[in-house]
Image 1 (cartoon, rainbow, N blue to C red):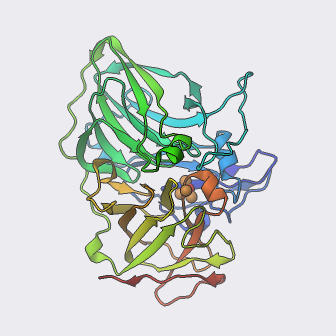
Image 2: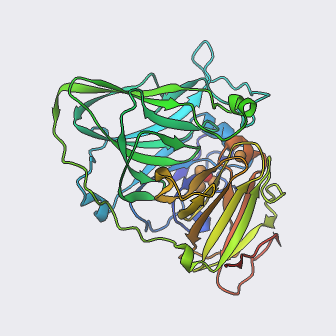
Image 3: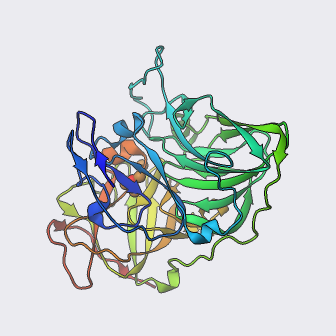
Length: 402
Ligand code: C2O
Ligand code: CU
Ligand code: CU
């Protein structure tokens, strides 16, 4: 990669969802000064998926992403391309980068902050791929939409205005084992999903975000966007549509981390703007993980505020969600998950290939105002028996499993 910073301020570029060495991750430590070029390299070795990238500068991530620094990164592989899925980029396979903005009278970005929102600045209109009031003309019966919530704080519950069902075929980490028929798709900040929708000739289908169930009380919810609905995109079907092959009944075999292989459990408590009672400190390594380990991570939102949880480098499998088996939209591989107030989410994940005792990866709430205010921690992956090279170790061992 060659990333040239043409801003007049420092930034970074993080590859969200990518399995890579910590030095290439683009977190708060890999800063790029104005005019400089950062050239990380790594071998891409993970299943086909819809990933993304965005700056990750300490304290400035919300600002940089709100200004539009976000893009999608589509990975393909032979297993995915052997399937008869809609896959013609921009024709029947359409990336949708969803961001909310507040615009002033001249159409410029409004940077005013809300004093009451528990999750930071929320926009009152949606741009998809940077476009206001977007539509797409469709000439095929089946269309695949790759959705990315690249908003800074807003959480969506995506469906169609007429309530039609559609097929979920992929989540953050790649394709599902089999399509899941759903009519609503909750999508918190940073999450991705791939869906396939069927259209009829001549119709206009409206992709909409309905009132998201944030699990907060009504007052908190109101200022966190729980009462908001938006039209996201119009799909205008031609008078004659080309037929598409039916969706395959099976997609890709799911390997991936299993709870039964886990060597330990690590607990995370999400507070108001902290994790396990502490805020981000670049001088502290919060967690030390051994290369090769599979672990269960247990994340509880002990606050009344909406939070989600994202882990760099890995993909995880949700074991249970608020005490229940994971719903369809969390049934595949994930790297970001919503954690409702008062609830616990447990997932299994494995740390493979890359150890570096001196460069950390991040875990954090992906509501960017929370992240910027310190709701983030650092972990290093080390060779078995090795110690982190520097940094005060925090609360850092997995407890025995079972
Ligand atoms: Cu989307 Cu730490 O990142
Ligand atoms: Cu990330
Ligand atoms: Cu949060």
